[in-house]
Image 1: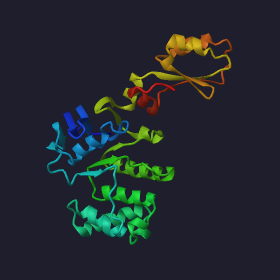
Image 2: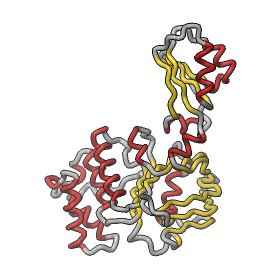
Image 3: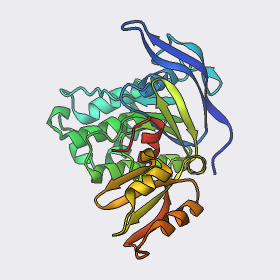
Image 4: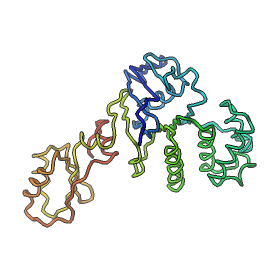
Length: 305
């Protein structure tokens, strides 16, 4: 069960990049509780990375307030917050073990304990055989694993991951999710961004949608389901597409591969559509909640194609 104590609080946070006069964050406020797994979703340049950097204490030139465990995010939180930026940083000339121990001990953990932690995670990631290999000789997937190890081997209370699944094959993505859920089960608060909206995202406790520097949605999947329309998927040889578009709006109707997707407010509207059909036999006729990808499109104002 998720604890109710708030470990991260952003209050009216604003960030302006003077170069180019870019407003990266505009009056951003949100709270994240201990042990939560939070997905932060937004298009490229929406402000996700900027928000992460502020929480991690990497950026201090902003207005508003960001508190982590009650402290300003850039003060005294280096040992409890671990941040994996989207732009990775590995020293390819070093051996894997040496580099990892350097990175973990940089967090203030003595080298003996750092090495013990690193070896534990190398074994967990099935990478002990690579501990003495130069990093630049490893595959991209294995380098990504090393990046994640640098973030978790210091046993952080808060883990911030910017696009951790980018460029990974499905097997490695599944493995990363397994690790994240184990960390969550042990009480780690995890915040991450991604453009991969698969079923594993349903493990998140809540979602934050950022559009052009502003939080447009912030809630649990149940709260999102209650707010956004349901989807009727219809496959029928007697589809009266134009009639349905005229009745429910062109923006709420999409045809793809012979299947009509219709955004509806309630089940009674599905019945109305069924009554329109001249042929009552349908190959497909069922109602579901919108997927995260569909909500993402709605929040960002992307029209059906």
